Amino acid sequence: MPGSSGPPRRTVLLGALGACVTGCSRRAAPTPAPAADPDATLLGRLADAERALLARYAATVRRHPALGPRLRPLAAEHEAHLGALSVELRRPASASTPAVPGVPRTVAGALAALAGAERSAAQERIEMTIACSRERAPLLASMGAAEAAHAYLLTAAESP
Image 1 (cartoon, rainbow, N blue to C red):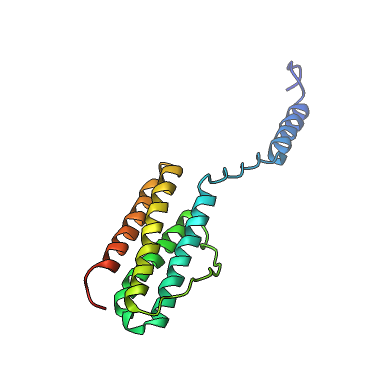
Image 2: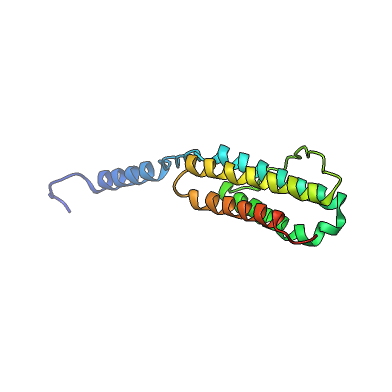
């Protein structure tokens, strides 16, 4: 409009265009990396311990095949523990090959050795439960309870 006061229309449009270009070209702030999991090392050690127990069970069944029906359900629980750890670690629990101690020649000795390993694992879970975060404590405590139950079942007066 002739005689109107204020900046010319072209100046206003160019200013608005410049603001849009500047606003659109700005990059979003980078998303911060998630904080390191304080329990990751502990859970990794736990996964290694579970694999070691599984290896003991497998070696015992190889040495004493008649124990297979009795030991496979307990080993399956350790497999489930590894699965739960994979979920907690948000990746598959790394597959290392643990060294397996020799399996005793007698069935009674083999069961006693497994029971001792389970008792040791249950005690270690208590210590790990105390050291881990509050969110993970129930998982570790339940794993320890399962291992204590395994030790009992392995020493029960049930015949192989």
